[in-house]
Image 1: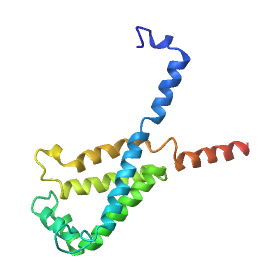
Image 2: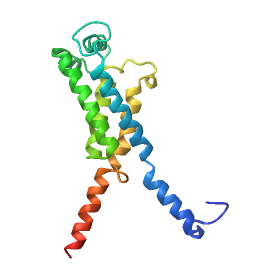
Image 3: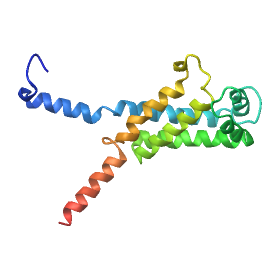
Image 4: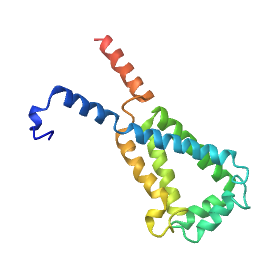
Length: 173
């Protein structure tokens, strides 16, 4: 309640502000996750040490070090068959997820991709974090879930396409 007023006595302005805040509530999360995943993908693609089978800072060494403490060693073994290919898959996946999330194109699918990337990294690379909340991949996984459920309803390509379909459907009646 606002200053002791009952919900049915809110002014139209109060309701309008609340409706607007509700519509835009997930936008900061979309911006953060989109920019972060674009940065993560570009960082991997431009790091000369990362895209190598072995050596300091390489995807190969990262996967080898994660193998013993992973919740799913078989997943790490799969990545170790071709560490560089896996590194490119993760980097390009992060880039696609970040762009889709940032511009709101296939936003639910992009968020699902982000959640799956975060889940796989949590179960492999950051699984051994103790206490568990030191591993940031779990927090990213949870952060993706509202976007999986709600998508990008404002300031997005999805919303523009939806509005266009509605306009076209209204014009045929």
